[in-house]
Amino acid sequence: MSHRKGMANKARSREENRQKEAKEAGIVLERKQIIRKERERRERGVGGPSVGKLRGGLLQLSKRDVADIEGPKHRRIDKKGKRR
Image (cartoon, rainbow, N blue to C red; front, top):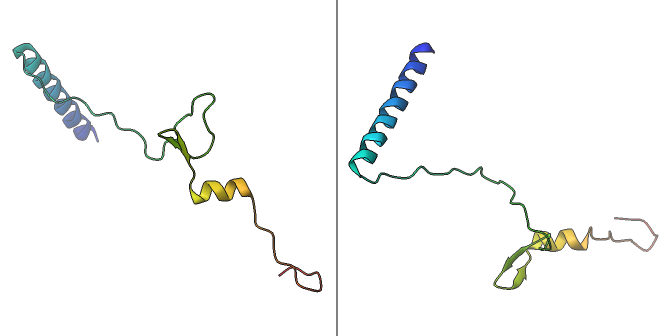
């Protein structure tokens, strides 16, 4: 493990040195990418809809959103008053 840590530190120092030298020489390098967690829930602003997506001034609801709003479906009751 100590060998691996040393290799990682050396690689980090090489990358920092490369970036520093490029900056001094006026070379524009790639930007670091910001990685977001997948399925991260986005916080909604105040006054916005709590379901669906607001696109172009229209609230688009998925079938799942509609099912959640309507609630569970009632079960069928036969002639004897028993549920199926």
